[in-house]
Image 1 (cartoon, one colour):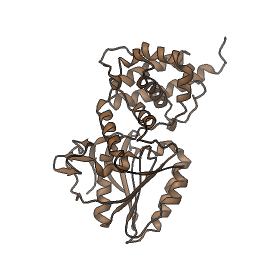
Image 2 (image 1 turned 30 degrees about the vertical axis):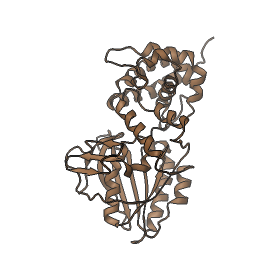
Image 3 (image 1 turned 90 degrees about the vertical axis):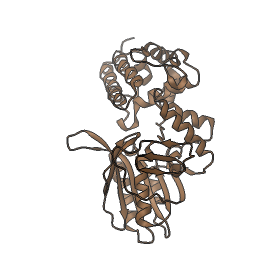
Image 4 (image 1 turned 135 degrees about the vertical axis):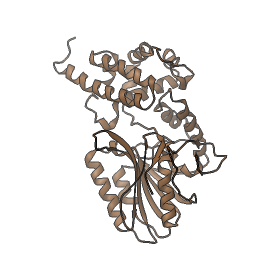
Length: 360
């Protein structure tokens, strides 16, 4: 059967998404995923099993993370026991991956054997809920608490399973800095690259809630599988953090609502007397699209304009931004009302530490 005349161009568009993600995975320390995606680029461009799984999704917006959806779908299959040959290369499933290994044949066989299931799983949005991002956001929470002297009312946008809404139940350590219970099951060490900020460590959470278009129940087997499937399988430290955070989630209740980001924020982001209301998010804006980001920012600023000294309002986030040289960085920024002056607090990786403090 001959392919449609435009198929090579469609394959190329899908392959380009895979190529970009391969670069990002290598930069962020996943040699396994980088190697698999580099092979997948060629397979997709030539019309192999990778293309047959991705076909029809080649024009998915970059923010929808087609490549991560593909990797997460296959990882889920591995964790379910459906691809034992590939599991031998996945540390998350008890396998081993070393430099020079060739996991691609087993990955390609899984694509060919489970195409319909994988195409169905591609429809699931990415749900990473990376716990280490709390280390990037922590200086912001401490700054708000110190400057307002009030308990924090937390409103997380794109909360996934709400694990990061429990950030105050984790332990953070760096030279000259510590926060949280020393016996906490989630421990984040070496938080700061360079000098730690001179911040107090007194903080009280008055309420915690969040929204997500597809919230995950961290106390269910299905929810835990979803979260684990989107982790990168050769980053075992991330898996250990996630498993520890899932234990915390079973002890600390959080209200999660299935809702669109702008609609929920417009409804919930209302300053309240006696608490510092904090709207926050981490690596969420790329999923909203340009118009969604513009609308969301307007909603938050309108809420900030209604803040008073006894009902302050804060906007805190870790999101990608363009550097002057055209490259990307991940910045932690805070705007606190009354006042409303945006501040750059820190730079970090998209997955958290090391955090480079930029505040005073």
